[in-house]
Image (cartoon, rainbow, N blue to C red; front, side):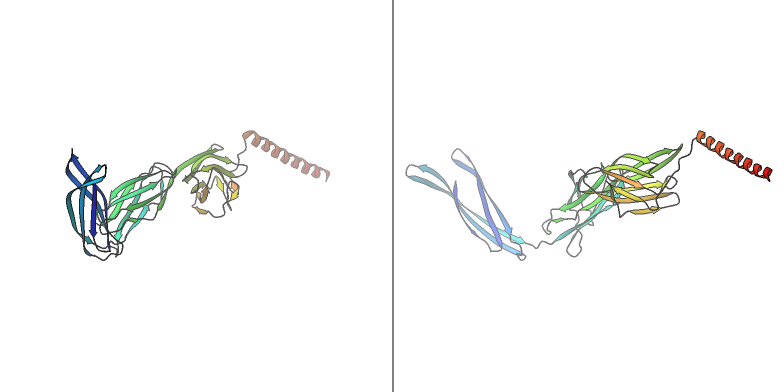
Length: 327
């Protein structure tokens, strides 16, 4: 099939014929369809625009001395295109709280607004979550009757998460995408150290994978290994009983490099140290204090010390008595 077309439309309107589809049985055409698209150029003033198109459709047969055409019909399309101005839109998004423990929920809230702060209701929004391991997934939800959006989600792994929202727009508004927001999922760990028959609990909140927790009394320090997805920020909050280890001041190193900026908070019984680090691989963290819980001497050593002290006292008395006799 072949066709000729003649299109008349204003310069602000783009009109494109894409293809002609026809059905026929044997040599008889039973139906046909012309597919076309109409687009208003950006900046086109609001209004109604007339588009006219005339099509002449032919069939053709190849013959030895050329191509024979048979005119089938003329087809006219007349459209009134209504052009309206599309307004810019904006999506605001927040995560509350920004740090949660594993197993807890995070609340994602926001709204879609148009120019002038007018909220857009019943809009289909897509939230794209990115996990600490680099994978991502998308969840769909609708804004409420007042234009707000909200969902509660329970993350399934510790680490630094991010999420952003997108909206495809509608006939009156352009699409929009929110800034990316982040939140941390922290693992809450308690490490029990038994020293001289007494248990001391050191607690850590971290968005990293933590292992190899150890205590060295002679060096007045605790140490552990942390790891997480490359090129992300790791964080640790370590709470230490004052009866176990004190720092005046504390010294913290990550792979031997001093941590110069950390936050220290305390109450009557515990000290909490919070610090961050840039994750590339597995790091060794050392927290060193200036005072450590003392080692209690064994009963045998205590008895020996008592004997020595008693012997010293007796010797001192004998020396003193000898001096009196000589006088």
